[in-house]
Image (cartoon, rainbow, N blue to C red; front, side, top):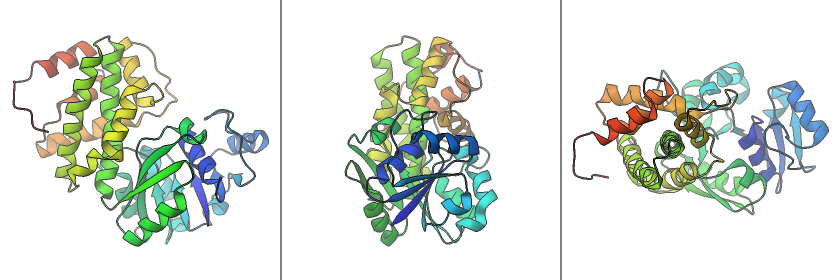
Length: 322
């Protein structure tokens, strides 16, 4: 088996490093200068640090070369996925495309596998998601994630091919639920970071995580997913990880909001765009998603953290429904 990872950010590089322990991997970089730096340094110091590349990992800026294998891992940011697929659709036909990005597309409300289905309909779409930080995966630390695919035979094959000695994949047929869990937990992570950054305490974070999880399950049910999927790695597992660690970009972004501090504009924060996309969906569907709406207000600077929390606490008292 050979596989390519398209996208040389931290997560894509980490996956390439893990897979290179068992097979040959091609890592594609959009930027030729970045590709040259990685080939020369034999690491992705710019995005991930000094994790050395083994001889089984090849770096290229040639999409023609990278797209040769039948299985391609798409590690480009979700909001850039449509443009990427449009630019190289011909090279991807008939391939198995594993989306490794998390989020909901603004303007369409689509998850990554749905974007793949719309733009490359004769490809087989899958989603790799769940609680896995890039540095942990690159370091070979034990990590478990979800591999979701609607085709059971492909799912079993991918599970076997993409699992490594330290990266354990559980398969799921609920692609929509897995994708939504990976997307929506980023919104809750921003909320938790904002609460902690503003000094609102651990109890506030616990409340946001729990009620945020309920919002995730409500939306999953509306979109035809199995709400139980949100109790697994791609939902609850990823939620816990990203809401409690500063390795999470979304959590760090929330911290900056709570501290009224600057945040690196070069850092991808998928939860910000997802909050805006999901607020539009919730309003259109009449779905109650107060935490998502509060995060959207923070992102658009219509609210500060005090206003957002006041709005959540002043809502009518109700029975807890998870």
